Amino acid sequence: MSSLFPTFARYPITLVKGKGSRLWDDQGKEYLDFMTGIAVTGLGHVPERVKNALVSQLDQLWHVSNLFYTPNQEKAAKLLTDNSCADAVFFCNSGAEANEAAIKLARRYHQTVLGNGRYEIVTFTKSFHGRTLATLTATGQDKVKEGFLPLPQGFVHVPMNDLAALEAAITDKTAAVMFELIQAEGGVHIADPAFVKAVRELCDRHGLLLILDEIQTGMGRTGKMFAYENYGIEPDIFTLAKGIGSGFPVGAMLAKAPLIPAFTAGSHGSTFSGTPIATAAIIATIETMLIEQAPQRAAASGELLLSRLKEALGGLPNVVEVRGQGLLVGIECAGPVADTITELQHRGLLVITAGPNVLRLLPNLLVTEQEINEAVGILASVLTEQAAAKSAAE
Ligand SMILES: *Cc1c(COP(=O)(O)O)cnc(C)c1O
Image (cartoon, rainbow, N blue to C red; front, side, top):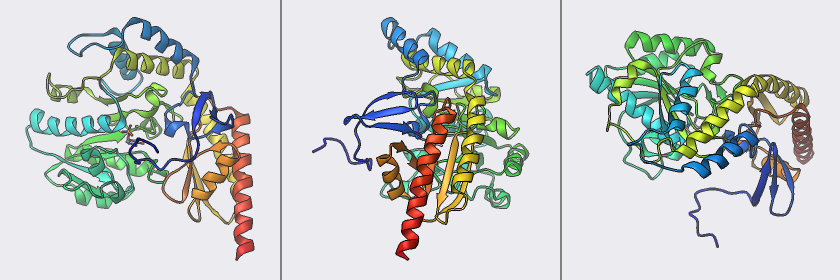
């Protein structure tokens, strides 16, 4: 019997080793990994350069208080600001904490810098922003809130891609609009470019902050280092986690210069904020992504994956739509995909769901054409067999 809380509905597989796009279980079975620990191991498992950086940092220094400077933290922040629209970074340990920091920064900017007392944050239905009390309240899905009442105040939800609903939700208490450019957990729903531009203009017109949750879409996943680059707009605040440390748990909240005075000394903090080891992982991850041109490769591989999937699955009655951007791809099916996931696992392919009816593919950014062909082949045979079995049963 396990001594763990049963918070995770686990598959009956015990994974013991990984390298690149491959994982192995304790029976020696090999898997092609098209879920990357939910968009975390973006450079594949145990990437050499990141591993070497971590090993040498382990010999040097593990942790000091944030009452001191460390070279890694400064360097990681500079790499992030040099390669994004942001001017300052706060490091944390997870996505939820990054979003928590973004929410706090937005409120504090309005309340202490502008002095207008605004606090409300508009988010979208079907969104996912994390599991802390504030971030699960921001999340636009009821299932994550059940049993956790009372929830913090100051969050309202409107449907994504509905400008009129968003405009109607804005009051003299509204501080920010916060959303994912691709709702990943919520079903791989892509924000409409015209809508995103209009939201940016709406925020400017009403003096609202635009917060983008790039925890899943960031770090090259959508074919650019950050997904906002696909839309020709810039956020005031954005958040990262998942792929930023190649598997080392770390997150970051980034913001533009006008926001910096809102987080004065003592206003926010975390013991483990940007430890030497965590920031060594970030530095090596970003440097590797730049050297390997990981975002560009994700863009090209994403197009290949999407077109191969459309070719192979297009005519199937159990496939409703194949959609995605870069290497964040969803296959919406006509019904629940739980059995499909299990069958794919039997045949050595790991993918994840995005809601009950959507298969989500999140290969690493350096995935090869041969691996894409292998995954599409397995997906096509399983979905074709399931379609045939269903029509025989009818
Ligand atoms: C995973 C995720 C989070 C939460 O990150 P944790 O590290 O699990 O706290 C928040 N937002 C988005 C978009 C995510 O994909």
